[in-house]
Length: 255
Image (cartoon, rainbow, N blue to C red; front, side, top):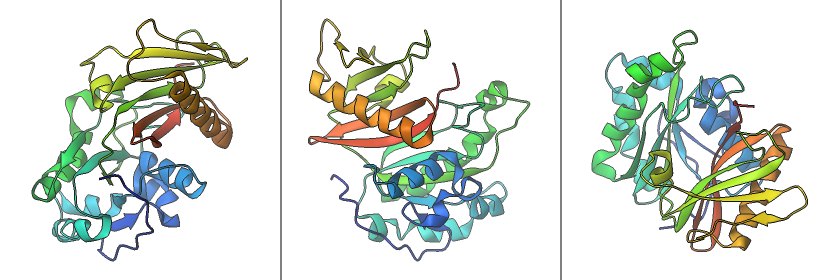
């Protein structure tokens, strides 16, 4: 089911709605969720969600706190019936210094019976060996967890407002059919589109996931995000049922 972004006012302790101004604080919601909260308030098409906050998660030691387990039972009433995407939102990721892209956990297509386990996996992923190896000097930060309705994507991918390899000022769009996790995991090779500053579009020889119109819309979205934050951006997006959704935004750290 597509989210229709109603205003939600969660009452469960430890859960904060993505449309709550408090969610714009990275110390509470982690950088990923805080950035999406800012963009949602600015009018971008961000799916609504709930954030399990850093402070309530840090109170649990090595186990998911009881207050979190109790709050999660209210998620179907607050967000509508699943399935959901459960995603890490760490205070160290998506910063100008380090992206931590792919280092923390994401669990997709989660139903009610698996929600607590998915939140626990995301929360504990800050302690993984790959995170330690990625940036042992800075540490893994504090973890919040973001819960959003699954987007039944027809196509998904990423877009860069500056070419991350050459540094040239052009938009690079990478797309796959279906869920974007197939791209992130390396399970498939994406089709690659480019949009130059003069508006000309470079299309792949075999375009399956996107049309030129889709690519242009994604490029426009990426550029608007860049203008909002006043620096080059790397975004994640999904198209479902003709709607374009913004799933993540972060500074490009490779320039």
